[in-house]
Length: 436
Image (cartoon, rainbow, N blue to C red; front, top):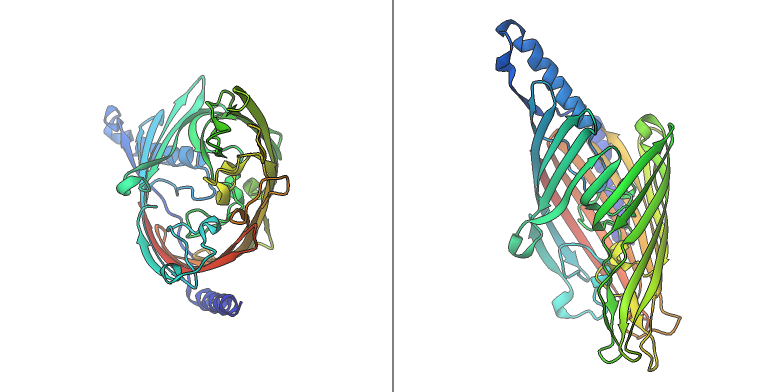
């Protein structure tokens, strides 16, 4: 607790100094290349080019999506003289460096589920550096009389095996429809805080999925979406009684959102999820299914001009892929005790809240708390099973230039098992990122 108080005090001092020294940062404007102006008379080319530059910037601003770990606006836009087709390229080079002490997490992502509850000399401390969260993206916007703005977007990072490219987003969208891979509809991108840590709070949902989605707005404040998504079942099977089975029904997700304020920057969202999971009962030699569900309240609320509160609370059964800390934990389905081949779904829930203070256009500080729980009281339990995880963070971000920022962050996490054993980890990390 003393370390947390000292770090928070340091952030406040740094923020006070920054308030006196920083000047407003000019808005970043992309470089626009206009094609096809040679068709016009030299006397009118400059006018056509200026209009095309302004139009392309407006089109990309209109189709830009903010949110958790989303990329900035593009650095370079190539557009036709009539703005019927525009293509943008961009990305970021990001270096993260961190040090774990008094307990560590095995990966460069800070995941409480992975914290060891048996401290040894081998897991007390660790230094790491990583550039795997660097990004590349290509975005195209074609204007159609029938479909309006048709947006295609592909984004990768380098978190694949041996620093290979890993696909994050790949989709096409128009008229409210979206087809492809992006954040799950059960994820609220604006409800996640800004962190150096790639994974973010353990109760947040930053799950990527293949989706077919339709989004529609009602009047000034309300919007909704419905989607069908690829089902991914993470289960713990018994070799003699249960086995994996192919999935046949997509996950169905929907939300209703109420937004307010300038550009609808504040909002509250209620989301629901239904998923049908198939498995093989080896004892009865038959296929069975279990119906999982999840509900979530999330939002981002701006107040007092410089403050933002982002939060989410989630509850359900069989939804481990939709909770950061439980993704990959095989807790969607677990084999029941006894000699039957039936499986059950542990109850899981969590919540997170974070407060951000925008001191100047260049600098902000933020901090938050997150917690995830799994209930095994319905019969499936072992002393080494995960029961509860906590995630605490505090950070400061400083924009050196419109396309360059540095940051400092402190993380504290705990894991507690069903048997009562617990472990914790501390991390201090920094980041330098240049957008292009």
